[in-house]
Every structure is written in structure tokens, then in C-alpha cells.
Length: 324
Ligand code: ATP
Image 1 (tube, rainbow, N blue to C red):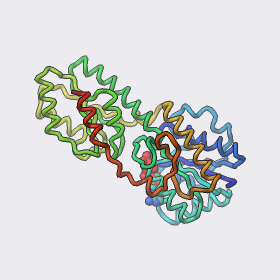
Image 2: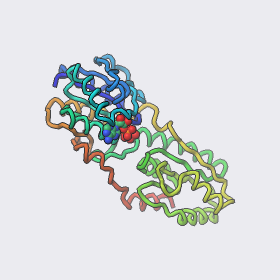
Image 3: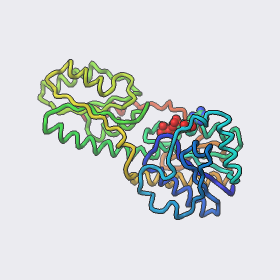
Image 4: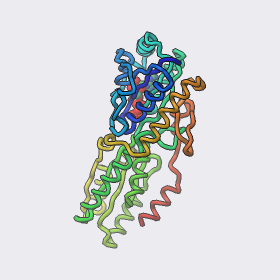
């Protein structure tokens, strides 16, 4: 390879900038020309592509968001759209692509790589931690820490007023932000999409808490819970235990922003380096670089996007014991 391009796509995640920086600097170190594609696949189709140098990624490792911006592109789903994108890479001689994004971005990269024979390496950039082939995704740790500091603050005010708070956290169809932030803040209950929540049991436990005069309670609910959103859960609690002063707090987009944690900066730096190394070695055509057991591993896109991973029962046994 001589010329590589890097883009960020799909939902933004803290640490994407650290990954871009690692890709650009590793590429330049190995005498490659590095291009930055603005706005993900949309920019690739619209020819919004800029040359990157070492200075263009200075002072960004600590910044949230992504200097390359991100977008979703309907046109990239079509063969015509992807052809346009390919032409724009071809005229610059791009012979390797690094895609930082989530499962949708990897699906796109896989199709693109198959169609035009361009080696594509993906980096898991999503706060949701819903990708196989890596223990953590870039952005998850920061998002979970943001949720934790918010829930700690909520507990202060809950404690002052003897209130029950139902806190909704992000994660799409994955419950990891809820699980980690709930466990780390001592939440009384955690509701995740991977596991049906026994609402009757939760209500019974809360009634028991009421009898014991334990009036401060926190329930952390993942946004993707099909069996009761935070608002629905609040309705149930208000109906069943009217004596509780019940409030809902939806944390929302603050979880996507902010300076990336140490862990996210390190994963992003390691994986950005690993992506360029894989392109240089020419070993992987359509793979994601991830970290498993603290070692860099490459997983084919088809496997990485299969999110069949379940949250094991031991996690729930653990928080039930610790929260009792
Ligand atoms: P996040 O999980 O954070 O939302 P994501 O990468 O999964 O990130 P998506 O919106 O699902 O985000 O995908 C990003 C882009 O990837 C889409 O807008 C589209 O351009 C492209 N893409 C997704 N799936 C495909 C596909 N099957 N074929 C071609 N392109 C795709």
C-alpha cells in the first residue's frame, strides 16, 4: 500500500480522534500518504476528502467527537453510490481504507471491500459495546464513566429528598452501559435488553424497601429495553407504590461527548496503529482490529457484526447480592 484513507461513520464516540491520530501518524511514519474522508461514506461519495499530515492530528487525542465528522449515508447502500465512492478513492490511488464506526459501518466496509477489492480494516468505534471480536469498543469506557458520574450526582439529590430515580442510559440494543454504570453506582435494579426484566419482582423488592424505610432507590434502564422504558417503568412504580416520590432522568447525548478516558485513548491508539500495520502487511482484506484479553486480534467483519453475545447470569447474581 502507498495511499490510505481513514473515516469515521455512524454514531460518534469519544476516542475516535485518538484513533484517527494513531492511523495518520502510523501511516506517515511508514511513508504512506494518508487521506481523511469527511462525514463518513457520504463524504467518500461527495469527494469530501482531504490530505492529512502529522500536524493535522495535533492536539486532538483528548477531544471528544471526531475531527473528520461523521454521518449516515443512504446512498452508500446502493451499488451506484459505492461506485462513486470508489472512483473518488481510485483517483487518489487509495489502496487501503480504515473505517472507524459501528456494525452498520462495518457492513458497508465489507460490501465495499468485496466489490472493489480494496482492503478495509475496521476499528470498533461505538459507545454501545455491541461488537464481537473485541472486549471493549472505543468510546464505551468514557460513556460508562459519564453515566456513572451523572448517576452519582442523581443519588445525592435522591438521598436529600428520599426519592426513587429511574435513570435511562444509552446503548441501543445493548445493555452494557446500563450494566456497568448500574453496578458501579450501586443501583438497586438494572434493566437491560439482553434479559427480560421481572417487573413484578422489581416492584416486590421496592415494596420491601419501602417497608424497611429504604426510600432512596436507583433503577438504571438501558434505552433499548423492549420490556419497559424508563417512563413506562415510572408509571408502573407510581401505580403500584404511590408513596414513593418517583422521578425519571434520561441521560441522553451527554454520554456521547467529553474527553475520552485513559482506556479509550489507549485502545484507540493501539487499534489505529494495528489497522495500518494490517494494511501494510496485506494480511487482512476485510477485518476488524479489536482487543481480546489485552492483545490485538483481527476478526472478519461478518463475525464482528454478529452481536449474539449475552450478558451472563453471574453479572446479575453479583449486582443483586451487592445491592441488597
Ligand atoms: P452506531 O452503532 O454507533 O450507530 P453504525 O456504524 O452501526 O454506528 P449505521 O448508521 O448503522 O451506524 O451505519 C453507518 C453507515 O454505514 C450507514 O449510514 C450506511 O452508509 C453504511 N451501511 C450500513 N449498513 C450497510 C450495508 N448493509 N451496506 C452498505 N452500507 C451500509
